Image 1 (cartoon, rainbow, N blue to C red):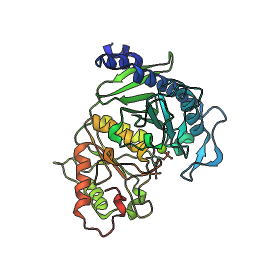
Image 2 (spheres, rainbow, N blue to C red):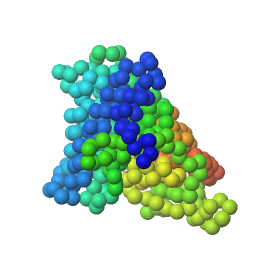
Image 3 (tube, protein in one colour):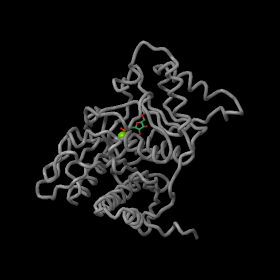
Image 4 (cartoon, rainbow, N blue to C red):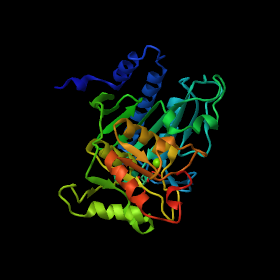
Length: 347
Ligand code: AHM
Ligand code: MG
């Protein structure tokens, strides 16, 4: 039996904080609170096929998409688990249009929490992996006051921690505070997250690409050439690549983090800023992937350097093994195009 099987998430966080004598322990406590929310959501996700929780609520979220019950359940659980710990001054969720204030009866903290409660929600009722994504910042407005939109609209570079939970064949929580990326598998029998993937490093080059090829017609010409290049046969460069696309970003990126791979959700003529949200999806996943040795960009610019202007901002995303992300950037840079539509206004 290997040593790592006995390292719980709680102990791992505390050990990490011991290396920083100046730390107050607050980040540890809030990550523990998050893991409790993850356990509750995991339980409910696992029951989803058994209880009458599936189906549409009938409402639309702020992006005009239909919302399923489990999305709202996860959204509510995260708020209920996180709003009273005294850690946060403000929160924001992909499922809510405006920032979420901390109720006046609770202590106001110095951190900011942004989250996508259940990513890949179109996969809920077909038993395919889905996930929760979180991103944590320090506030930029004065302490003691309620947090504001300004606290939420920070560059991804300012994140102090980020992570995700993937609800798949098992539930795995992956997090980073900037010092290594670590994965913990939930033991459902006694409810502990146990270290299963220590200090994950993404391979520099891969042979897997993940993209919705149904949108091929609308892509940047350089991206079309890149995908065709990956499909050609060449032993030396290990081509053709394999294609893997689940339609749940958390699951797709988790696989690529472990095996190597490039995940892409580009802009196209119909979605001029892509589909994915900078604050809830792209920034936290970019912190994880960069810390693991990978690369994340909008095709031209590092995701973590984008200055957000609105809470639900979208961005094209190219993320994964470093050499593969560089290569798609080069293919797109080589193609002369008259329109900047593929990179939004953030290039
Ligand atoms: P969601 O936050 O509404 O679940 O949407 C995000 C998801 C990602 O997980 C996934 O990569 C993408 O949407 C799939 O989109 P598409 O069906 O256009 O390929
Ligand atoms: Mg999402």
